[in-house]
Length: 99
Image (cartoon, rainbow, N blue to C red; front, side, top):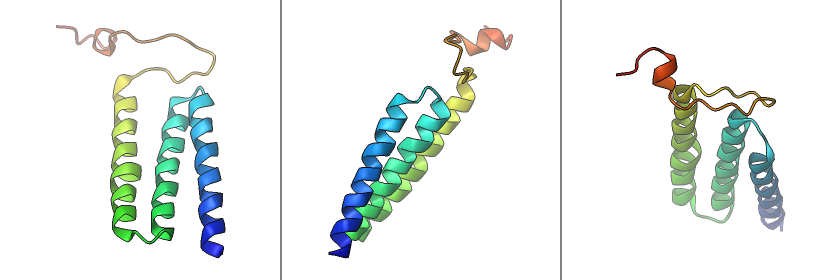
């Protein structure tokens, strides 16, 4: 009974975090919320009795993927300003490293 309620609450939190990741204008918040969805998915896998799948989801889905997304965001040098719709076409051209 407790496990069923915990799975249901985790599923609802996953849906909320997924919708939040889609609707937010901040890329950083979207990355963090998508990592949270994956972390909650690993909790659901653990509650369902699949600890090996939960460990793989936590390590790859939540950990590695979030780090790769954060690295790509840092490398893109795109302003994460909610009021600005400006895009950087070529970050190397702005840094003076165009070849």
